[in-house]
Image (cartoon, rainbow, N blue to C red; front, top):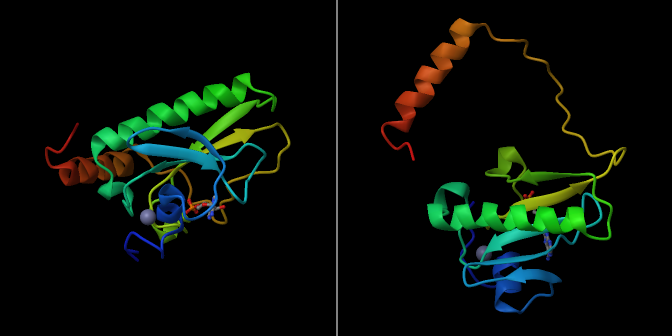
Length: 149
Ligand code: AMP
Ligand code: ZN
């Protein structure tokens, strides 16, 4: 579902200044602006200037900066006028993970007791035993294949 950079990508248009956004932060690699359809008041998005569709496309330095900026924005929301009681950082990678804009972005979502935002799980799959956890851990270690940071 790779959208080329340019007019078809809403975040590329925002970065280029051809679509509206309410910015809170800009640097050489990243911008951050208000989400147009906020989960809660103050919901922000941290967005690379480059059209990087998925998490795997984001270079480590840019991804690290996304987290650093997200962390600073979280602190600003906590210190600011919106009486933020908590923060969720959220990144959707892939349609199955609820990614709808295929230009990578980190959500910074202010949380308030009773705000009603929930992750809902339809099916409780039960608690795997240690053997299953160890088998899955071994499979993930094998997939890492020496690519550990
Ligand atoms: P997702 O791809 O599901 O992680 O989320 C995409 C997010 O982008 C949603 O929260 C949208 O509300 C937000 N969004 C989509 N278009 C715009 C826009 N033009 N300006 C600001 N936020 C947007
Ligand atoms: Zn884009």
